[in-house]
Length: 130
Image (cartoon, rainbow, N blue to C red; front, side, top):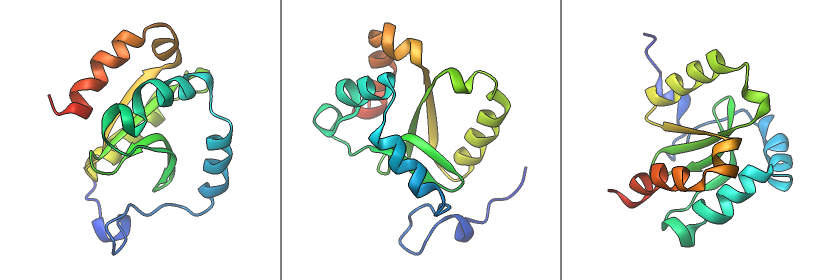
């Protein structure tokens, strides 16, 4: 396993560094959320629902996280059709993020759109500390 250089990953303020080129794409993604992302935000992740501040489309290192909570060191990803063939890439990304202390939870579009009780059941213990 490669050792991660934390100084190269984190800024002096403790934030995770990211490629500045991702900022434009993250802004565009924020302005045009998928239906599943909008439902996730409105029904589950807004601060009044969790008590935590989640950031939408947050650049982290070389990636853009769908939702990220700094205090929980938690990324929530919603995998749509574009993720069908990216499992190896997603595994490598999740492993890297885990090495720098960030946990990733993944849901499919279908789970968010058609099985909100499952999403709630998975998320509640993470955001409520149960």
